[in-house]
Length: 198
Image 1: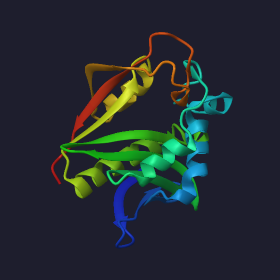
Image 2: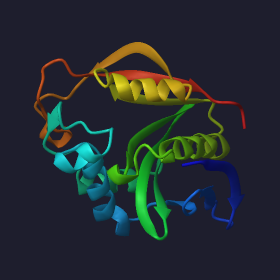
Image 3: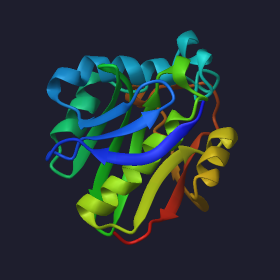
Image 4: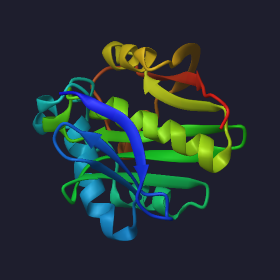
């Protein structure tokens, strides 16, 4: 499926549309009304058998939950964060968190509906996220953390210009809010991308 990368502003609130071969993607800031929908989307992309329909599943390394309503609500309410809801035909099909952390922005809580994975949406969404953090906060770097054993996912980010730093942080073993580990070697690796100045 081919995607056009041209952006067109459609309102003064910064809403943009990216044309796809199917229907346009609409980006907007999530609200409290989106919490349940976003939790279900994130869970479907990473946990349980439903997540196996996509390639981002963590079902082989983690059980339990990926997030919860409190976690999603906290991102929506934080003055330094935005949770982008990505819609197609009025239905939320993806999301990502953008957080301003001084000189850089943090990218997290990224999920695409499993049935739509592998069709190029991820590339479009991450490009829009990078554009927004440059424009809104003037940052020149995007940071993210990825479970270090997720080699295929890390390779995907490397193709988008992110580099592995080798800087690791521990997985929160024992905190079920982050899932139930199925192996004992999980760590997060920091990935960084330098962004062009706005």
